[in-house]
Image (cartoon, rainbow, N blue to C red; front, side):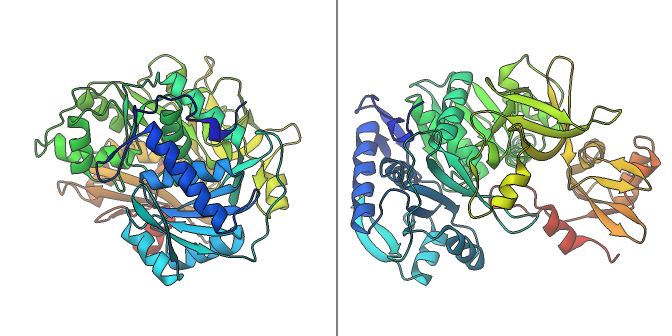
Length: 492
């Protein structure tokens, strides 16, 4: 297994590696020089092996250069979405203890705001732009390991939607495994242009798109933020692979299905979804609009992130998350009569643990080395995995299990419903089912409830159906259910 700083070794120096957020083309030779320059700047500011380098960023070539520069120094990179709030950034800085914080203000006004607040100084130029840096000489380095399997490469913080964010320690081997498996499974090649609007500060985009693309010698086109117009332009200009979350595709469909915008994609050969549950009805619409199969996948930060993908098996028309990654194992723990139980996973991508949190690290793993995902799933006889829901999101209504994705699928089948999210809420001696929907204006809560009565058992039917103007999203583009409940739920 190789170190991550070997990722672009041997790539032709004059071939294109990245199309930056502003359209600038960067060759592998220029990227390699930028990595060297960023590493020199880090050394000048005291970074040594085992130190943490926090990169507050939105998608740009500087983020890629800074990440790989940290790898060359055997430092840990802590990628963080610049769209976090000041308190969120401060909490992660306090936990990670970075020797150096770097801000990609060239591509992000949010990063610039954080840099100014924290008193960042101007450093040397990398890729033609001065770095914004803030150093902490009191930071303490961690012990350096001599193996890619045990040396931490990235410290990636979970979203914290169910509690305080935890720093997931991922090794060089974990990220290299995920990058190379995805590059091979998707047949990434030097003539590919991978469109990447998902934030590379999150593990899905970082390892299975950015690092995977670079490892294959492909071009990665980085967009600082997703917009429908920006994605449509990139597709028309030759994008060959696009991966997104369901909410991103939903926004594209709203424009293209109505004829408001045209979908022109002369070189597109692959479309993929991940990061959130995929409704089969939305999958069918995406496939119809793009004229291609939609690959679905599942992972989590603690697995670096790959667990399963439909690219490893025959084409599916359902909402399956596909088949487990090569050289990995999945099993269902404590399955009920319906075959549903907690999904557990073992493989080369699994984390080394949570930083500064040995108790949580121990609780996340079984005695025989399986990661407890916290997700409920079942496995078909042919090995296909189906997510049923989060164990922490399971709703127990009058003694019956209610799985939010099942209710969400029924809601999405209602005429006029555009998006749906289901959450549980404790009431006296029971739990109730809350359904949140956005609509096209042609339906209302009463009509939706009538539609569900013939499609769901009584105990699965929502006690409240709330039509909302829009769905709150996390910085990664995922639906933020706690915010939905907090903002729109009726009094209990």
